[in-house]
Length: 355
Ligand code: ATP
Ligand code: MG
Image 1: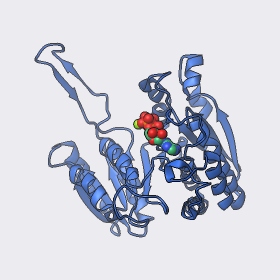
Image 2 (image 1 turned 180 degrees about the vertical axis):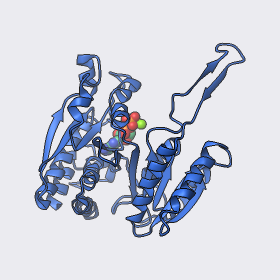
Image 3 (image 1 turned 60 degrees about the horizontal axis):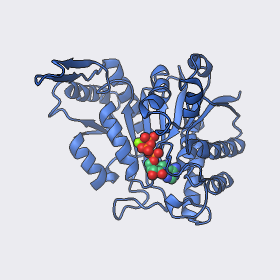
Image 4 (image 1 turned 180 degrees about the horizontal axis):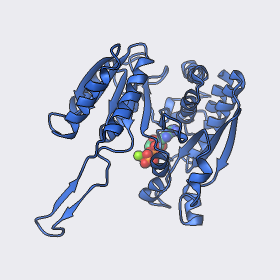
């Protein structure tokens, strides 16, 4: 049976890298005999907003919920629509309504890419950041008192639930089990945040009992960010709350070179709802319309989608194809951000050919 994929290209370079994402997926599907059926949607973009006054139609949930996965480009065009409207009106709706409680980002230094960390080679940096995506510090619980006076007080609470913490930890432990090094690092700050973070630590200890083969350590977020830069080779699977995971999932990919390459997944592991796969980068208005955006972030997100759909071998093969093209280092093929003079299309085609 064909897997049904909803395509939402969004804005800016999202519309340029998406065709290359689809090209790579079609080539991989052909090689591995996987049936993919793509359906394209215009909503979830600022152009849709300008025409309809909203980012999504009222029945978007009904329209999308039956798909096996959502493949997203990038959203946002700040000159036309404020970011809080475009982002909250689309991507964040999907994350919440489809209970995509895992945000997953591989941080892997690819061949031919220069890490901003001096002396680092491919193989030195190869880990995942698992971010809790639904609760924690990003709650709307709180308020202001004595507003406008010099006694003003502003409070925002962190919400951690046993269910919410345990489910992200379970996902991270299970991911660690699939990795050769079988190592899990927990981000905490229980020396300063004295109620929620010790609770997070307690749940890590409790969960670890079910995974005796996993080596577990924890770091306070401050020294952990320092160690991402100083010792990226220490890490295998790193799990954090919504805020800490947010910070780490930008810092991690930044250590692996250009933003044009990094992929991400927003996952509902039980498959009750579709999961969403998108590059880390945004719509990049500064380079949009020029055909020079790097399509690898989109293509690699497609590889994550294949793995999520149960085709790990196909996903791995697509990542290898990306590595092959980057190693070859043909400047006519590679985009400018990775030192070439090629186009979105030349790089996308080379990867599809490699597969
Ligand atoms: P957002 O708020 O949606 O994350 P942003 O403006 O913060 O958007 P990006 O749109 O990701 O960030 O752009 C950041 C910088 O990285 C820009 O200079 C952009 O040109 C560059 N960039 C982003 N994506 C790519 C890509 N695929 N290829 C080459 N350069 C890119
Ligand atoms: Mg940004």
